[in-house]
Length: 170
Ligand code: AMP
Image (cartoon, rainbow, N blue to C red):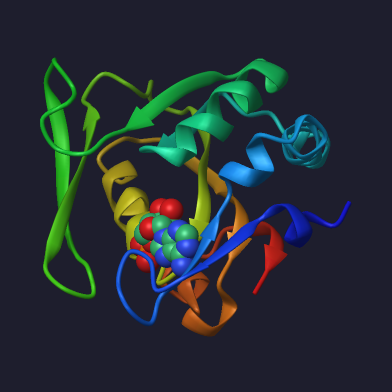
């Protein structure tokens, strides 16, 4: 399937010079949505995965159906102030300024095999921060899965040495 034909390119969003790869147009196409979920589910079918770790917010859209397909649990990594119970948090640098991600302290049982999911890997800062957050748990990080990878930004180089899978590269 030609996923690039379903992904909308929006120049200068959210700021001048950024080419935003908008997956809403992919998700609204039922064949496109099925394709990406089935693609990940098929690629991961022979791996034992206990939990999908999904990054707010577009990672949630992929993470929940994928977890359901794989018979895995779903764990949200959220923006600040959203999770109600005890949290671990990490601050990380963006191109301009910084941001924070949070996860419930009791989200991951020791020894769990986990996979991180998001829509796009750009600089890799968000996914790398998530990997650092996971170090708080004695879990086994199996890899990362993204729909889109912006290869010029070399985001995967920031990630731990586990498999990093993307379906479409720009
Ligand atoms: P990163 O630079 O890898 O930390 O990207 C941060 C987040 O911003 C990712 O979760 C993506 O969802 C989103 N993002 C960054 N750059 C783009 C882009 N050019 N198009 C669409 N989403 C983007």
